[in-house]
Image: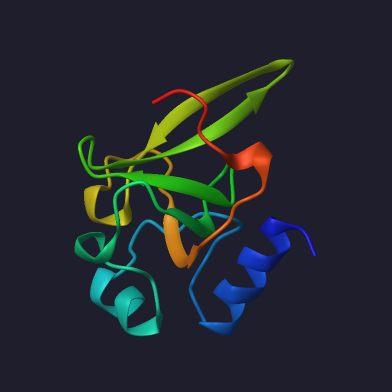
Length: 113
């Protein structure tokens, strides 16, 4: 099973109101937490998380930036990109963390911090 499919299956099992790989615009944070989304205060610096956003299903939490970072592939380029937790919704894509993963595959490791 791909990591995306694993994240989708977990989101479905938690009955999260996802619209594709995104949260609906009117999501309720407390309801998401009750269903299993990881709170920002519970994230560990440098840890990788399985979750959902438009461009990745694995991202690393960076406490200093207060953002997730994931390796984005666009055309032939691969580069790190930052993305907010749902608590910091700024109208753009968000990474919704569902589970901590101990050993992400090489393709997900952040090469540049």
